[in-house]
Length: 367
Ligand SMILES: [Zn+2]
Image 1 (cartoon, helix red, strand yellow):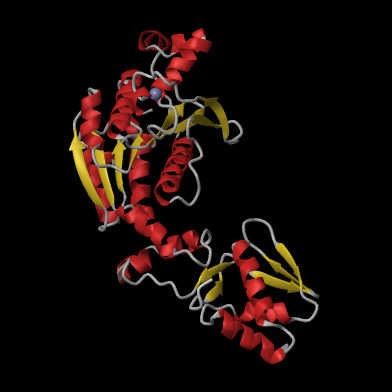
Image 2: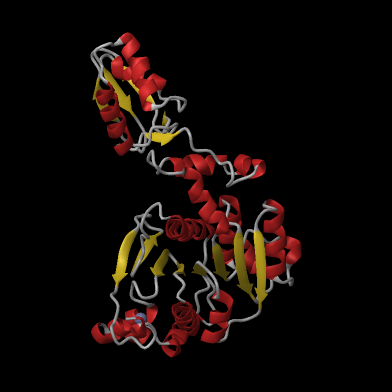
């Protein structure tokens, strides 16, 4: 630990004392620390982010002379490993201006819950602000996602949408209003979200996606793609997959299937792509393979059911995954596997898993 580190107890790790025991809370469980003499309680009281380890020791030793510097150092190391501490010497200076510091304060505290003493919580927010995100589709999921991206401080989003507002959209597409019927979604969504967060830069790419090349052009230069456009359903999934693989951009995608939400993540060259998945399904499961062909799906009928609570839940899953990819606070949860969230019990679980196929026509060349 560097000498100028100023250990600070996180607000997300509150402590309370009962008899001779300290309980450090947070994340639904409390850590128990025996403290018969009260010296550890004193150390916690001094952990306000203004003292070095040597100064902390001096403070504790003033009342408990037998406590050594090494003991204080060991305690700080243990608290740090347990996730209780952040470095009070770290500030947002040089990364964020005053407006941003005010706007993202609660985000900083959220990211702060992940850091250890040698990390900078502001860096996570900076990564969100500086990331280039592409959002394909501004319908049910897309309109929620764009608003939420603006709320969480994403700085650059490129959006693609061709559709206009219809009355039946308004049970879930929250960016549009009753008087908007017939107007282009991409213009309305962009204007409203920029009003909500003037700092977000939204680049519009209106029009239909009709090929892999279209996708490749739109996702060029992106750090991550969120795909929630859904027409034409089967071809679009293939174009988006192939376009993202060619561009080497991670893809987070998902949607609603009447009473369940599903989502999955592809990182080109690292996880199996959608074509790898299709290949495996065709080999082992002819019934599902039949369902995957557009012709037969048409006979089943279109997906015209959508209920707002499931849309908002799915939005959280998708942009939670995007946050993991961009900031690295945790590994992606749906890499190479499809997660499902049934409305019946809201238990998130894996429903499909696939590997890379070495001779995959889309991603096999990535080795
Ligand atoms: Zn593949």
